[in-house]
Length: 212
Length: 218
Image (cartoon, rainbow over all chains, first blue to last red; front, side, top):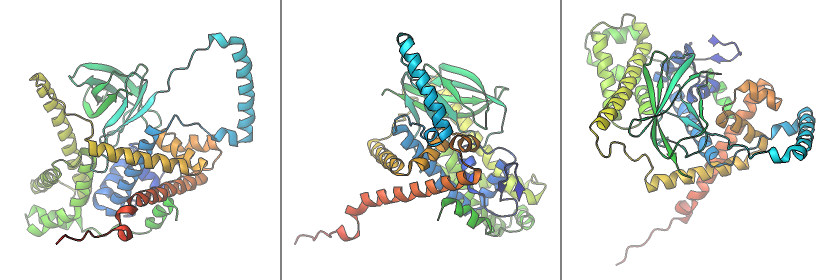
């Protein structure tokens, strides 16, 4: 077995199956080398892990489908913890007082960005392209599965005619790459391109932005 | 059974035995049909799975076939120096195939735009049937998500939608790592069970007891 810092183990080194946690990280594009190579090699010859990964991909897709249709979910847990409940209660009381004094200066907060997972997956089980609302803030999270892990990537968005619409360089945090477009994009078809710092094109994702 | 048990159960089971790589590579080098057949038997499902996951089902058979030709020819040219690294070598070739296909797609799209073709981008929208299926699936997923316990729902939303790391979820929800894993597995299993049940319910009018054969006239 290959021990990891967090105590979990990758089970493929000695011809055993991958743990659920490994499948989850691979499915979300967060499995990095050397585990990535080891897992993908195992995946080539292991039907059981192929099936489990397909289920995990389908589950992830189901969750994202549900998430797209749900209203912005409320975080319920802090109220369950007595400490957090007290802290939040005090903070809420402070806010009410502050709001009473400064009510007029309050502006309606901006919409939270819609989180769009950009995937290269276009298999039969997952035919949908990434889609987001037009003219609203968007947070794009490209799937990095299979890419050489880098500290940062350059992202470029072009419209259907190939005209640049957005560009940024983003650092990877917690194995996760994301960029936020505060003003969003007009409705249309776009391609999100991912480059390494040397300017080499690594991947391209399709993105559709639709009017609400 | 909790979903996490799956990995724990399967951890002890070895992967189905694969052949001695050195012997297999030697057979392929000698262009032995048995060797080529065995290579295909061992890797075809995995290669197909990987290619389909990365590139979609279009031209899948051709892509799988091309991959095997590339692998076999490379081995015959002596490019695989360590036969025990066959799995890694096949993976490298498959990844190159995927990268080449993506590059090809990008180039051809650019060329189409250069030629100023009127309809260079296909309509990315689903057809009405796909859209209806997708909407139904979405409705089921939402119903299921709403029907599971709030704590389970929160774990799934934090993990899958907000993509929060396990450490953050544990800290904010006051869970140990083990509790988090167990709760997440339970939530996934519950989501799967309820999802299946809802799909089955929708299918009931079309199955078994409700099915009536329509007699042919005359």
